[in-house]
Image (cartoon, rainbow, N blue to C red):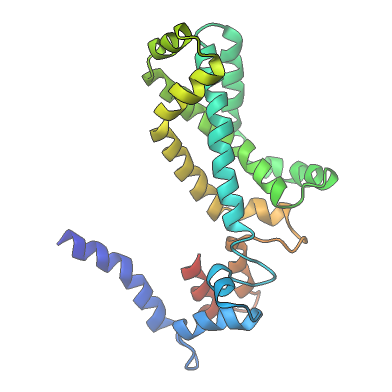
Length: 240
């Protein structure tokens, strides 16, 4: 019963989209093909990978930004969380660093938006690389909080045993601590992926005018001041 209910809740919106937004004998699935054919003629492989609208490509933008951000966030933020988490037990200065980083969660993006736009433009980072760097900074407070908290569940005796065996701190981290944080790696990857993939404001203000857009920005191409092209819009929603 629950499987049927979940299937109904999942598939019913698709049928509603198909039935409600057929305009002028131009239904959703024909519109889906029209999205691919209208903007550019591409090979079958490129069509399956890209949604082209205002020179926007999934493979070159959203997917690239999301994957790179996830990988770098796991590598960089886990190291920062490990250093800060273990250091707080020895020195009070690490406690101050921890609070300073975590306090970044309370700063809204609207306050930082205009200074970041100006700084990234001056530094030549008004592109995908600049967006990735900003995502790493934005998600660092939350990820450091998660990693440092999860380290309390990992016994220090394991690191002490590795130290007795002659392993360096770097080796102990990569071969003992890092593999044991797999559940937290998965949590960080999911939260970072959802936030990065669905974000609109950061790419909009940073990459504006560069011709490099992400998938959520493609939805804006089908909405104007005077109306919305629903057949193409909902086709792009399914692809998103």
